[in-house]
Length: 326
Image (cartoon, rainbow, N blue to C red; front, top):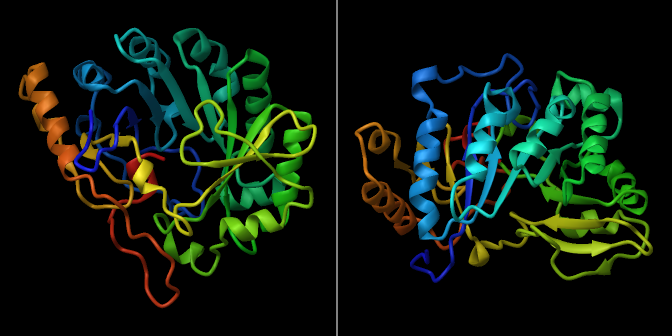
């Protein structure tokens, strides 16, 4: 399906829960958040009904997100059901990795093809500080298992924050020499707990400057998304840079998001949403669901306005990342 700006929308991100077993400082407050009630979130059956309706409109790729998607009971069965929907060619997941190893074989068998691990530090003490919970070792074991099982590609998403992990940029980059990983450095976005993030933004250009080896430009890799990719000499993997702040890539945006509470969100950084939960719960047929999808695309803006201005807080959207889905 084509939006009013001529962009082909073929990528659906589905948040299956707002719950998470971590409390990352740039995302959630330490005490956590008031989780949605069970009846307030879409059932897996409702999500599957929605996907079956929009797949004929051109949705080919689905990414499952959270919160942390692996904390939701029945997630493996859900992935399996997604994989059987006509037209869905690719299913991926974004996870913090803490629960991945124990579920990895079942997820692979169910039809999960690709996985992105959110990991912001390779130092155990710093990991404990930023997540407030969990163990770095669990995540690293999950990443190794993903490689062993042949998930392709296996990506690590690293949000870079000045004064926190910008001293580890070269360490992350060097992982691609030994392992066929895709390390993606992401500019810090003002969509979480703004107090912690304030003053920590670092641009992709500065991130690149902290990599001590020469970066060799490469063409887009499988599942490349909005990143610009490079590699180090003789490396097995790749390094990507995602620039939502310093260089917008909205003109190529091909995605739309379905939140856990049943809102279609056509832009990550906009408060514009369309409620499809009520549509789904009023015995909607495929045509009605497709109509709602088209209405959501009609309010998809050409570009977002995210920026860091140290004198003000960004307030374009009232939702935080754990409410939207990464």
